[in-house]
Image 1 (cartoon, rainbow, N blue to C red):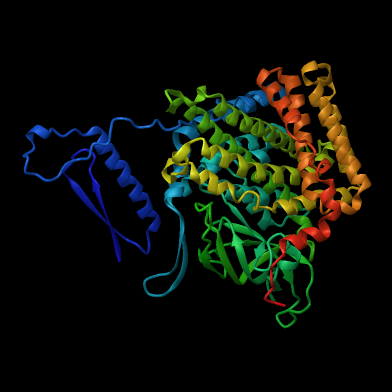
Image 2: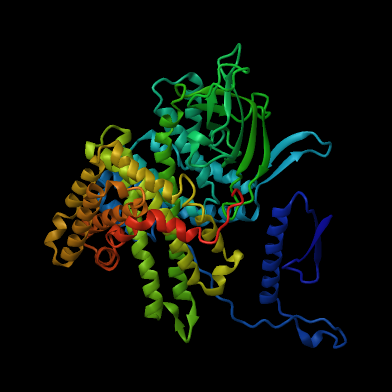
Length: 637
């Protein structure tokens, strides 16, 4: 079966070209050509004029007159130069010698995004990956095919040092901030290559923190962190199995059996979600078993390293079963993979796998927040430009106060989320080099799940709201806008759902004997202390201070309600701490728009949801379940 496309040559109107493409192998190419056809015909209609006077009147064919107006599409400018809140943060929070290096690199990279990378990202969306499991003769090949733009994104990731920057540490602990700022510019234009980058960063961090590194791991680390595209490796994280996502400890069925002669294990299992399935290596969890005959002796999970292909280039005793059919992130090949004796090497002590990957979780959660904040910023940048292009009721829509109010509310949310992201990046950089204080380490433990949870939820809300400001064009796939919305939907799910992150926040209380809350209180007070002298910030400072006290009071007085109130506690911590960061930022920058953002954040919204939802916690144990299950009959009864 074939699809046929008729495309007019845009230079010679009467010349036609027939393109024949097999449907079963090139669905993504068909989609791409379909959009190219529409684009070409549009150019023909707009640019080619036919002299009707020389055409015989008996010819029954004629072009439709489509009018002369075409809406100007929103333009993407250099995303670094256009992002004044980011630039002010670097100017006032970072030492001058460090700031100059970062600014220079980000400005150059911003130009490359506009001139090259953004179009590559769109090509990845038009040319989706697909899996060819067998060749024409029935031989199993499991060939994962990605487009050339995806391969170019890989090369760019290496050339630009998107991983290397954080591990070369040329700017000391500021290198992690440098990397995060660069990823923040890159992510919305990456065609989802930001996901392999995140997994690779997590793998590099895991190897770096190993107390003993075998030569195999040292080699992998050098490939993961290099700038040479010919040597650069990416890594996957194959943790999720059929039984569970976040419940890794109870949901992992993969077993690892030691080889009788060599110093490796063979893994047998079924990995349900494997993002970046085209990676060179992967980290995965499995249960060790002493022999092939004793598979009932279950132990804790052990972390393993495996390379996806053997020296002969063939897959490492695994099969790619299928690619996932996802709502968004379609550019990213996510597969189900069967491990059937895959050769792997231990990276942790037996049963200690989950504790070893804790460093990796901090990294990948930070990357998730980068994607969240950057997609909010990108779509608002486009909406800002569109407000100057779109005319309605006789004037540009930027002249309508209600429209600008809608955009400004999103701007406040993005500025607050950005400050929290950059703060956590600095804390992580300090912790990696042993430069963090005890309070900073406690803050990092608390804020990693808070950051991931809060920014992911806000990204879905902000992107949805911002899509609306483009009207019907925001709903058209070829406007390049819906893909931002679809891809944002995964952010509250990746690396742990909102509920899972909230429970991790509560767990941080008990694990540190509530010292994380004491560190939070001291950091908030320190951030707003100087700003109290500013009468314009007096009310904002009072609200932040009051909210901090309410959080700590609630946790101390009602420990039996912490689990049911976990989400509200986490949101209260996020909003309160962001408020403190916004106030501190105003004190440093003395910028009027930063002042407006800080006051609106602290004075307009509710910083502490647990204050108003208290009554619902005391009755929720019974009433929530009764209300939800009212009328439901379980098939198991």
